[in-house]
Image 1 (cartoon, rainbow, N blue to C red):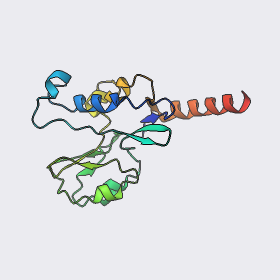
Image 2: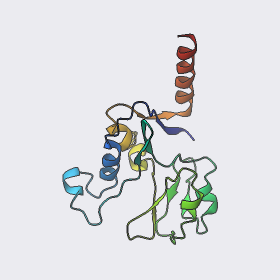
Image 3: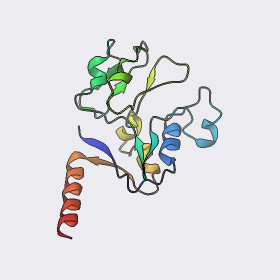
Image 4: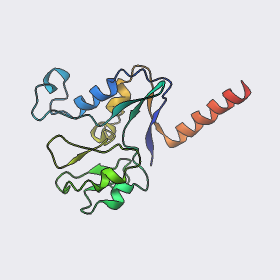
Length: 166
C-alpha cells in the first residue's frame, strides 16, 4: 500500500467537514448546492465518532490483507492490481453483509434501501488525478492527512524523538 489516510484525533474538532466533502465528492454533480437535490442522495463514507474527549473520523482502513475481500462470496469486494483502495463492485454485491461482519473497524455500511454496501474508496477518481481524498482536503485543522507509509513513519519517528528528548 502506497498511501494511507492518517488521523490525528487530538486535532479533530468534530466539525463534520470530512463527512460533507465525502458526500459531495460522491455526488453526481460534485457541487454542494446541487448535490442536496439529487436522487438518490449521495452518502458519506466517513463517519465522525465521539469517544471520550476525542472525536475521530472513521473510514475504511484499506487493510493490506482485507478481511472483507477475503470473505466476499461474489468477489464484489476487491483491490485492483497496484491500487491502494479496497473497492466494491456494486453490480456483483448480493447484499449478504458478510463484509460488514468481517470489518474490524465497523467502517462498512449498507446504503439506505440499497443492497450494495458503502465504504471509503479513497476518492479513487481524485487520487488518480493526483489530488487528495476529499475528506483530507476539507479538514480545517489538518486532523486528516494523506501520506505515504514512508512519510507517516518518518513523522511518527520525529514525533517520538521530540516527545522523548523534548
